[in-house]
Amino acid sequence: MMREGTKAWHGLDAAALESLATAHGTPFFVYDADAVNARIRAVREAMSGRVEVYYAVKCNPNLALLRAVRTTADGLDISSGGELEQALAAGYEGRRLSFAGPAKTDAELVAAIRAGVGAISIESARELSACIAASKQLGRRACVALRVNPLQINRAFGIKMGGKAVQFGIDEEDLSRVLATVAEHPRELDFRGIHVYAGSQCFDPAALAEGVANTLRIARELEARSGLRCHTVNLGGGFGVAHGETDRELDLAAAAESVRPIVDEFIAAGAVKRTLVFELGRYLVAEAGLYVTRVLGSKSSRGKTFFLVDGGLHHHLAAAGTFGAALRANFALRNLSRPDAQTVRCEVAGASCNPTDLLGIDVELGRPEVGDLVGVLKSGSYGLTASPVLFLGRQTPAELVLQDGAAALGRGPKRMSDFN
Image (cartoon, rainbow, N blue to C red; front, side, top):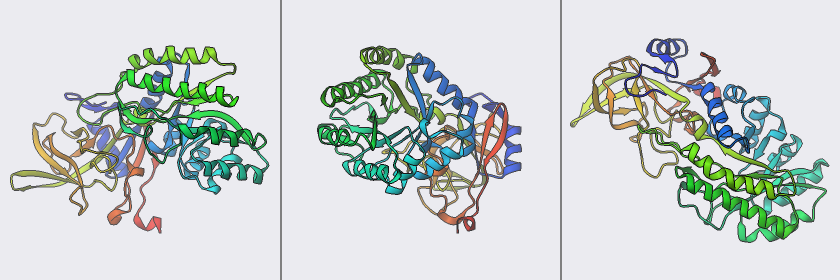
């Protein structure tokens, strides 16, 4: 990535970035697919190949990026019928997909079964009934896993998605009733195992290992209680990565050292072949993305200096602090055109009429001049598709994918009228 004193982002220096801006306009996103692939390999190797790595499409569904990681990722985690279509368009086989989400429609379940999705995560009794009906309609068994909302809450996760009253999964204490329904429908259901996603943004290796141990405990107890076998256990993800100036992230080596013995014991004790999966998004792609916007002007207001740029929350809601953040924290910002410029404390304001449209609040930035490119680092995840792209009707940015040193257009800009 780009750090203080460096003059390039993933091999792209000021001249290269200006060339991309000239060719594709500003703002634009660029994603380094090689860096994403390296992260996937690093996780798999740290776990000594014992755990597969699925890429979570929701964090960045760019088609060119999905294609670029196809030969490296073991599969994809999807959350909608649209993401199923995107995964198939990228060339993934249905068996390499897991499908989560608390409100799957009947049509989505039919499409997933028809496509041969390897594990449909059942999140409620209603979904289980709908899946059985869809299977009967198609005359084809559905591969299902039960998403479990564990009793135990893991307080080390920054965003907690289990261990409390949530819309995700089946409460651990209610599993018996659902398991009975699964056992009654062997013609319709191919039971694959369980899925537990306890939360996101975990920076504590011991806490991550604790979560894995708890998930595998649930799997063992389920097997003992029901006689069913967990061929697949989705361990969730949530590996922490910070977006600010610090490079804080989960210590992968320490996490793997804690997790491997737990996983080994579970695999060795099983009567069937086990497939364990981490589904990861932000950890794989956040650092591999850059949002580039151009400075249009500046102004002073009551002692503060504002630099006005042509990007903003309509493209990058997370950087403006209004997507999934309890407390606003600045993403790391850089003057890409003049990385050695003397720094100034300032605000970086987006193009909209919304007062929250600030890509940087009280930040240190190499003093920009009109026309300079400003980059928002760690923008590979939850960027464009997690933003209100139709707000104000501005054109969407180009998305470029960097692979083998060359940047290619992954998705072109769209005007508001293109959505009509």
